[in-house]
Amino acid sequence: MITVHHLVHSRSQRIIWLCEEIGADYEIVTYQRDPITNLAPPELEQIHPLGKSPVITDGDQTIIESGAIIDYLLRHYGHGQLSPAVGSVEHEHYLQWLHYGESGAILPLMLKLYTSKLPDGGATLKPRISDELGRHLGYVEQSLEGVDWLVANRFSGADIQLSFVAEITPLLYSLDDLPNLAAFRDRCQNRPAYRRALANAEPYAYGPKI
Figure 1 (cartoon, rainbow, N blue to C red):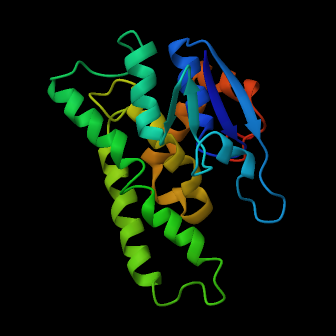
Figure 2: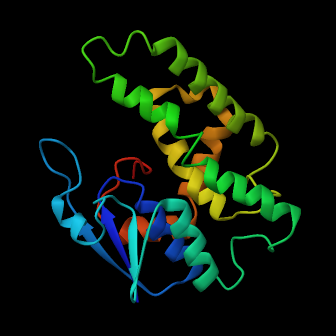
């Protein structure tokens, strides 16, 4: 059975969601954040040396990194769901979005979050971070113009990957200027499988206010 090692209020929430979307048989082991540092507890290091979430175990396999986990689950349990056919143009676009969600898209958001905790707010880096943030969020916003989903306008694992970007953006950047991204977030959060994932896990700070 798939075990999702789930850190509360983290990106592992979307892995639970994916399991619900594809009807995979899974269980959740929940880990609480340290009340002082807000970091993952050391117990996660017993699952993988990095001690990070998301991480899944499946038999003797241990898989880390959201993109790798999504790819693994869809290849082994997706039965052709949520991923375009290998070799198609759509599959190449899918792979780009899948990896972009945890590389280019997330980096300026994380930089802004971390530098905001510095005494000077990371003043010397602010202009560069703001430029990169606007560039990447603008790219996603433009890519969602006139469509509901990122790859051939069909819901896929890439949308699940990018959902976290859409969910944490309001903490750092106004969605008033990003109506397509805001609508994308709402579409994700209104999917029945997303709602089931919420019900199966701990409260999720970045989910819908219900």
